[in-house]
Length: 229
Image 1 (cartoon, rainbow, N blue to C red):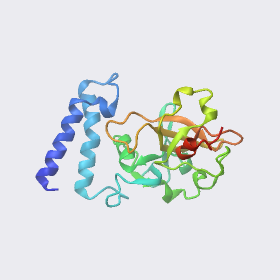
Image 2 (image 1 turned 120 degrees about the horizontal axis):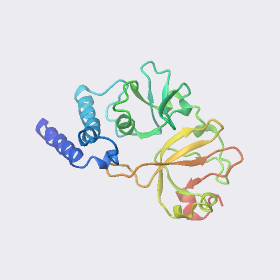
Image 3 (image 1 turned 45 degrees about the vertical axis):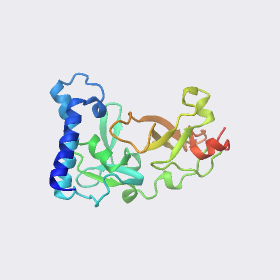
Image 4 (image 1 turned 90 degrees about the horizontal axis):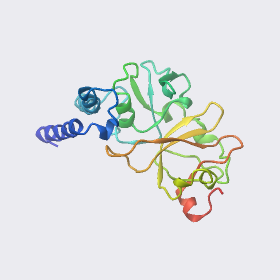
């Protein structure tokens, strides 16, 4: 793509973000119109700056849209702490298994674009190859299944007994976060791959908890009728 074409593409992205900030930023809330628009524009500007400089620390050529097999996490400058989310907002954890994972590198960068303490976006695989998502056994009848970023899934029959509105809803794994008492909190998306018109993620789907059925099963098994009941 020529420089002029790149400029036109950037101008188009910026114009869309300014005219409709809600697509990426949701409800305006207490922000002023200018703040709301800036929140929508800044991730695009940062992305353009990183592209012009050849990528940030730890970046790999062409990987900003790549789907890490186990996702991407955000780290401090020294790589010793990792971003997670608590009820009061973003926090730090020294355990990468407890870090919030994002489907794409660009998702992590966008969420933490104004997070001054978050310096690095790295593949989860690089720091926690022995995460339970690789080694733990499933507690449901779908023995041995471990969710991965991008997997198509469905709500399990156990989950649907209480939340029947999720029946037949196509879902994809978009985030994984370890739980202190065991198991994995899975965030799901209603479309895949995600784009700037995608709805927000829904978390609170749990798998691999001790002595508890899974809330999700692989879509292929759900369609075949062989999933957890």
